[in-house]
Image (tube, rainbow, N blue to C red; front, side, top):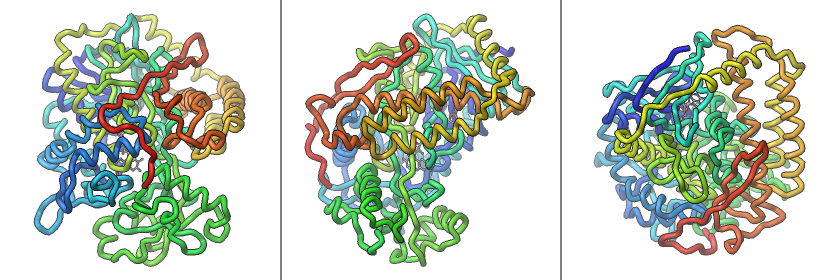
Length: 575
Ligand SMILES: Cc1cc2nc3c(=O)[nH]c(=O)nc-3n(C[C@H](O)[C@H](O)[C@H](O)COP(=O)(O)OP(=O)(O)OC[C@H]3O[C@@H](n4cnc5c(N)ncnc54)[C@H](O)[C@@H]3O)c2cc1C
């Protein structure tokens, strides 16, 4: 057992973690823990861009961005937080540029911008060019620039350290316990401030654009320690995953002029969103695609539609979409400039997560009480700027804006925080759990259970939901939990025991799936990405509120809190 003492410990080297680290380093020592090599975080996979109303290509304003985000969220986003994000977007992108991010340019030298779903001018009049990008490798470009800045500043990285527990005790966060994957040794990181920036959990679904590591471990840990999870019923399906694989084709492809077509060759989004068509928000486009398929207009009667880029100039595809172009060649053997791409919605983004205030402080209840020394930012957090549905390019913005704000809050509050102290009993509990798993001799295999879980989540809890299906899912989850208790591990070694880590991740996937299903069952309305076929209307009278799920006495209990509305009253969501 190794014990480390830091002022700040950050879980996750994605954009949220890196931005927070840069700020927190101004006040003291910082350790960043990541279960992968730091630059292999999922942020590196972000393709299309980061939103900011720079107005480089056409007039734009932060207020329009604010309105679009509120409307995109189906009025569930907290407007004070959304305003903070949109107002800070321009400064953020300029700062990233100064840190060395190689954004794509227009001929006069300014940062280039393209269209993205739900981003409009003049409060919904027409699509606007608001996404700043670095070809279709925007996340990669930003992660590498920030990682370099962190190295320069002396942030310490612990690569391939898998966090096993976040110790919240006596009303405060004491630090974290992690396993060094290379050796299997346990390390305690005691800290004054702990920031969770552990990303999303798309791996609860069978078809997803998310990396293998997006398993939501830290949400599971905190939930088990009594911290609530907010708005978990809202999970975004991106309309254009490669058929059969789920690999993402960025919305930037439609931003560059691509259109969706059904088996009749019809540009069907004209019917669903007459004003902005293929650039409608993702929840609407995903439902439209699946409706086309349900009504028999999938390509060749099958369950996919086409994303057609064949009319987009080849030069634009090569310069602005090289990554997805190569994906199509590698995985499908087609050239998107010549042939349409078969696509189907893919699980993409978690709107829900750990509740925080606008400075990343984790909230313990619906009244807004905080937990001393515990912060969260990025996709694992719910601040909530995305409400019931996130707009494309707003996540990178969220990670950078709120990662930085959390880092700054730590900076200010560090002096008043005591050094964490992780008790021996807690360490022993974790040791025992690892030993139990290593010695487990049950008959069930992790891979099989995970497959069943992902399959059932997809079948019963994806784009369309009903009470009947959600109840079926909850029954399945009971069975899955029983099977999980009877697993057997083949690998009993300590070094690089990926089987052990997968078993731990699976435990968290199951916990999160249960919270998603229970939260979705209770919300008897349709809003954003949560669509209930048995309650197809949005119900502002009863449901204009956030869900908070708590673990209490072994079961899940719920509380609700109002949405913060400062400027834009809920209206019908037409595009
Ligand atoms: C394919 C794809 C394309 C996207 N494109 C865009 C886009 O163009 N624009 C946009 O705005 N958004 C996009 N998104 C969404 C956006 O990229 C993510 O929401 C965002 O990058 C999340 O950043 P993060 O810092 O919160 O976490 P991540 O980048 O996911 O990082 C999580 C970190 O936590 C660590 N971690 C997790 N669990 C543990 C553990 N138990 N122990 C130790 N470490 C742990 C991981 O190792 C990693 O370092 C895209 C997402 C995907 C999947």
